[in-house]
Length: 185
Image 1 (spheres, one colour):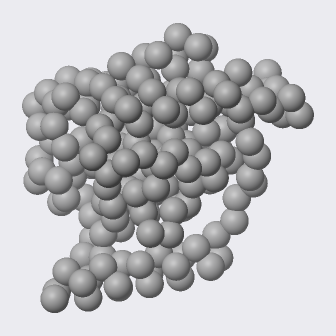
Image 2 (tube, one colour; image 1 turned 120 degrees about the vertical axis):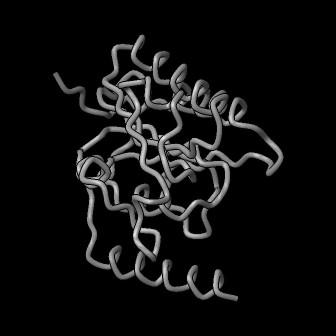
């Protein structure tokens, strides 16, 4: 019962924040984008490695990539600490309604990324907060949230794994024909 009440409060606070929130929306693909953000739930070392490999793939396309992860642990696990490319926040870094508190998370949300890729495969409220309030122009992700903030929804089956979501995200971001997009220098 407490979790249901808390979830309702979390969503109400998020809706209140979104009421005054605005961002520029624009469609990008992997050719037209220059700055990409990745957001994910670091539930274990395998997931962490899959996402960092995806980040390297994007960097090989000459994209500037920033990655933020949320872990349910109280401390950042040691394997996650050894990667300077990924900034991680923990359950101790969120307030009682699930809002992330670290400055790097607020800076991440304020950046004007071309694409935000949310690799959440389940509803994790701190990640929903970040994805919803991100200033990214084009948001891509799974249908993991009830009120999804994504502009492009990659609808996968509930039993699909992260590898499949990443594969589908690559596919659709390559498939989008964005001949009207402005290229930035």
